[in-house]
Image 1: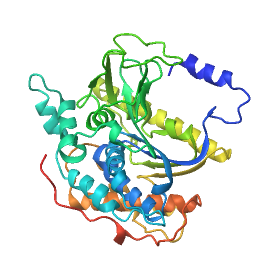
Image 2: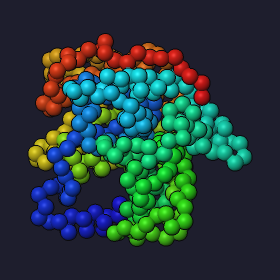
Image 3: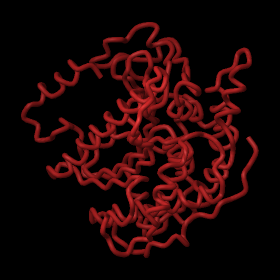
Length: 390
């Protein structure tokens, strides 16, 4: 978004009693699933397991996701009509229809294979990723196969405009280009765009079709080539927490973060390549930190109620009794796992599931957002299933 757009948004609504100038805020619950490739995908499965036990999944109004979080969200969205919700709001078959396919997929090597296949004429790495999602998770499903509620929004970053492309069942949009009503784009392609980590798995090109993109207020780039082809990269480039859709619409904001923090380095390299990589990582980290400051600020102002849990936060830091603990050493291990689309070992999967489950439990209790009808226990986490071939 251009600086002038941000300024105009605030100047138009000076009296609105909301720091984010949100006009559509409702007393609803939204869930944000961060990026972080397979690591995030698995971590979020653990968090979903706990949210389900508390009956919170059935009460969600919005789910926004980025990158690895979009893989988890895509599976949840596609399986939604098959979830068997009991009177207490708990889906009795969440493990079978959501968790198990995702955990099987986590045992598959994907990124290197996709990159190598992308070297063939007429192929791209993005094509390989989308094909794997098709074959193992989503089949031929399109955005129109998703539920109306909760509304699932998949975030990608538009390399042409610097804005976010938001994909959902009712519409897809880049506010500078326009919007597509009721898009029939394949779910696998959308999730591939959301998880197209640059530069190796990026870009994903989505052909938008003639006259498919309609103008909307503020769409200053509603013209070719922007309305013909979307050139997209990982949604985490724009917003790795997937906050914007949710915090502008939901009073209660739940954030599951399994993204990578930029580590401290005592002696940074003097080589140009290393400096460029380090600088880009720091810029990305500072952008995420700024969003987190805003998130916690609107919570402190009482304008939102926020529960945020992160893969690098030790459970003991919450200071809450009754949470299934993982050790500080295990937290460090989980938080330093790779953020790639390559195979994770069974013990790695187990630890990430536990980390996501424990993080969600502790944060919800700390924010008084979880009615603990079911004691938290790692014993209720889904079992791994045998890997399948891509």
